[in-house]
Length: 332
Image 1 (cartoon, one colour):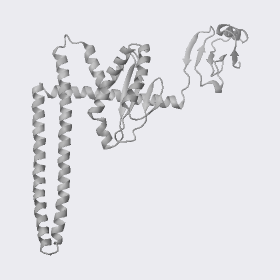
Image 2: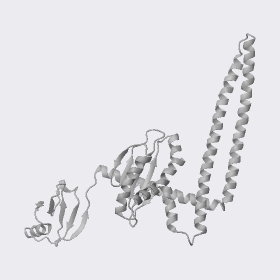
Image 3: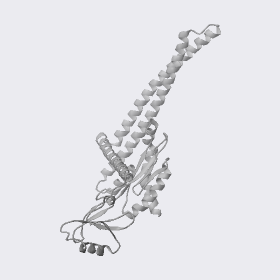
Image 4: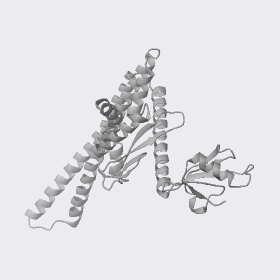
């Protein structure tokens, strides 16, 4: 029986359909609404209508199963991006858990950590001091050779080729040694920053466990959520308000304009420069859990971009996301 546009109530239309047809036995009927809002009931779905959401009905009009509306390429692409963000979230959580486990199994106390930090700093300083002594030696060599060259010039003599080459070679070595010292200083700062972050994390973990019986689980979860850039909604109404505030957060902290804006994903454009921060926020709903808003931060794929994404600045942006949403909701 061909599909027909239903212009009366749905129940009456289905009854008329049954009366005008042979007994249906166990044959299914299908009900769907097209893009114009027209409702159809038929025992077959025409090829040009299969993209619509449809319900399979038995002879009594009861819904047996539902076939959801076919997704467009854009929707499939968004689903893929959401899945990638979800995997990124899970990876961050697992990495944090693994790191916490290493911290707790490696160190017994803050004193142990501070002692190791002091030892590490002394070792790095020793390496830098060796390089600085090498630099001083090279600078002395250069000064001596430059004096030798000046003496030749004062005597009206041509500077020997070997001496000229030695001066150039020493200048190059000095430049390389100065760059090596700069790397020592940068490495020391990075090690110190990372170690201080570990000390803060160890303090949190040990304080939480030492008062385990009285500790509030929510405090621990909130702390972890701050570090992950994760906000958990209490309900859909709250999530809708938080979603609006998420736009403000991206515009405030991101440096690339928003190029995807749906009800599940807000994403900034790809980073074009080494100092660009591309922020994206996804609404993730896992079965049995409350919906969550997850902040992800991307940088340009370069050495400076990678350094930026691991910097304190990015950590602070991620940690600020949940408090920002909570404060914004409290003021609404």
